[in-house]
Image (cartoon, rainbow, N blue to C red):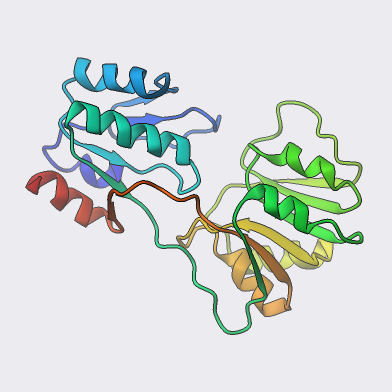
Length: 229
């Protein structure tokens, strides 16, 4: 989206939470780091005279999104979420839908399997409760400290991923089960396609429930929203 905005006359700023160390280059001004909750974000919005907020955070960054909704309501600033439609189960998919990461951990109370854990790094430690499995961990950045899984392999990679590469990953590690968050979009969907092709089950973590808000699914629609609201 930043690339498109940079070609317009919109004065925009891109804000990163700072949880990923390797940030992509941006053609517009950017800031990195949290705001300090609702009060900090509210102060920033007023100080910088922000007129519109587009929440383009990850669908599972629910606390940041909730903070943005509350701060914008308090400041009477319009907010829209630029998000991705969730993936839908297709013929051949073997999904086990669970409402949370914690529920996915509970589901793993079963005999040893080779598990592709593709949930990011924030809640990896919850899976220490199920040490019997062999885990393949897909991460954008290397972990900051040694992980406590008895048997694991770390795959450092950044999307978009391909069916070819993910098929090779599944076959190399003999993956029997995938744990994924329903983040939507095409960049990380290949693991879902490969699981379908190979008959591998997927524990699909559903998205957190969000307060009522305007949701937009395309960049051009987001730009139209800014110009019309």
